[in-house]
Length: 124
Image 1 (cartoon, one colour):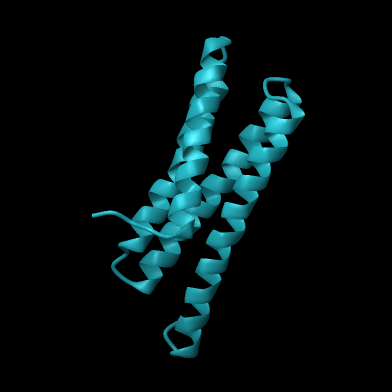
Image 2: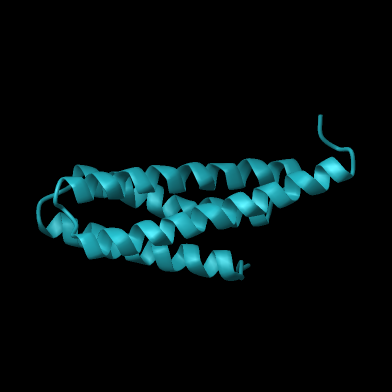
C-alpha cells in the first residue's frame, strides 16, 4: 500500500535530502547531530503516512501533530548545524525553507480536519 500526494512527495524528497546530509556529516566525523536530524527529518513523512491511515479524524490530527513536532525539531537541528558551521548558508536556506513548507502544509491539514470536526459538533 502506497501513500501518494503532494505532502507525501515533499516529505519523501526532504527525507532523501536529510539522508544525503547525514551521510556527508558522518564522512566529516559528525555523528551526534547527524543521528538526531536523521531521526526527526525522516519521521516527518513516516508519521504523515501513519496519519493517512488513521483510524479516526482525531487519530489523524494526533499523528499529523507528531509530524509537526518532528518538523519543528528538524528545524532546530538544521539551525544548530548551521550555527556550528557544519552546513553552509545555501544548504541551510534550502532545507529550512523545505521543512517550513512541510510544517505549514501539515498544520493546514490538521486545522482543516479540526474545523470539519467542529462543524459536525464532534469536538469539545
